[in-house]
Image (cartoon, rainbow, N blue to C red; front, side, top):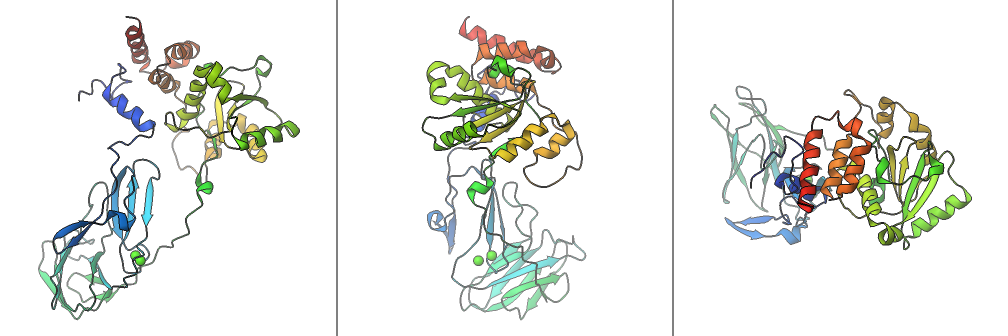
Length: 410
Ligand SMILES: [Ca+2]
Ligand SMILES: [Ca+2]
């Protein structure tokens, strides 16, 4: 597929393949097809698909898989990373078979200390031998534990372990019982008691869903919403509600008796917008999606935009708003960029360097073009022309707008 000028500029035509791919990813579509994870069990050299019974057959857009005995109980647990959410999954191996294992941490002396490249062959009295190698990286973008893991069948007796050190001689170790060992190159095995990482109970989904985001970089959205004239030069809280949403009714009722101070309120019904002004609804969705680099995901209502007096989008709230949080966010509207960045963190922490992020109006204009809202894009470009002209790919943006318009009206 020809990629044209994609990746080096804003791209031009709407049929630009790389742009289409990016848009699909932003819409939450799979990058590589809807393929479930698969697990194969090796049975004497033949493989059986056991994906379903392992519980690993998820339709995630998976990337890396790394094996390690994370909880230290002797069996291998699994970490998987995904392109979309959840970005990381941990699978704790709870197979109750109670079988034993032998784990070996190799430490090089004349070879590299991690013993990368070493090969260990475990011989048994009766069963076939097992071979493991220390690798730096396994599969795609993954690194499994460098500790070698041998699963043992019931009643098996270990004969010996032969370690082929990189660039060195083979070392044979006898008298090993199941367990955990650390073996230095040329030295006898020592019992290894690695620190076991703590496994906390998973957080509840509601605790990890971001309900409110206070933006470090504030996108300008003046032409994407209509500000009631009486709210000029005042912060505005613009809330989208749905007729069928109980949280919306509760939120509006709460505000009737106890309206937030220091901000003008404006409420829009999604159903009314769909009927009377569908483009406005699309513009508001673009404003809500843009900071998160997503497109067209289902909207959770009430959805509230905190917009400052300069029409910058400062915060976004999904669901009912905690009044104390809103009061604090309104007070924080005037923070400078550094303190705004510190405030935007969703968890405790501090920044160690770099400049605070700044919004890029040009990428919002591109979102409007991607959505085919050419008139809205033109209005946006006209309104923010001065800022946009500082962006080095502004000419390419204008070129793309011209091309898209020519397609509609050749
Ligand atoms: Ca384990
Ligand atoms: Ca286990």
